Length: 336
Image 1 (cartoon, rainbow, N blue to C red):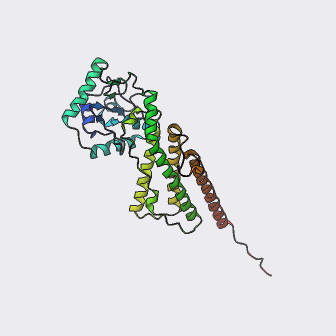
Image 2: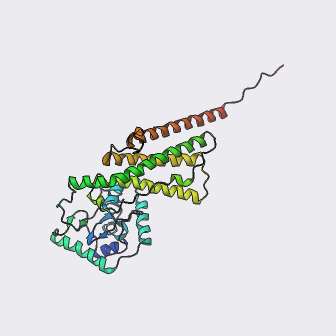
Image 3: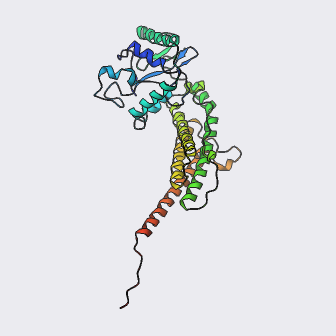
């Protein structure tokens, strides 16, 4: 996603309006990171349709005024900005526009004093090229109120400490996802083979909710390549929770297709969780009281392999049924 420079053509009026309707939140659904926090501003003004031809979702038909207008700008935290940038196919113009609209419709507008303070800070940075109390990257409207190094890259010791704090929660949530994947697979196999379901309550398939992500201050100490791994994993969990809740509220019949969808969604979340664990805590055990179960990564590999085997068996059964229906019945020779 394109991030404007101070000289990119965004008017003062547009800038004020963008900050005013943010509700002090990143526009990504359910992100709780505050744009204003302890006298600091942490935010990125991003173009939905890129400002230059090499950027994502660039629209050559836009005029310069449309390109830098309020409707084409969205406020995001640095974590979710990276998530969106890394998956242009998933985060389309329509999805980002809806994301922006949903925030504006639900957020409590910021008071004028907070808006003016933010814009005044932006102006002071633009005029001076940077001030001692803030770090600032001139190409992305990204600032923090702290005396960090000029390049704003967390030190290795801070990054290591952040991983140590965030790893137990990551491991606990992933272990639960692996368990949920196993239960979804059992139900899928039963539905596929037309056997009675084991009777798991729907709440079994709701993921654990992290308590540290995304509001913990340690998130800011993670390197840029680490934070998106957490975001992608935990965002998968939100989608699964929404899926299960929606099916329950609409009295969806939990047949083989539903179990297939749920199982593969959970499997995808486990894949994302493993990618995060490989970075944060690759040797973490699946269960502290069952060392024979191996590490989280090893246990996830077993569950994922079982999922794929169950899918393969399901497809073979479906093909066999289709073949039996298409084979004409045998008839005895007519007697003369």
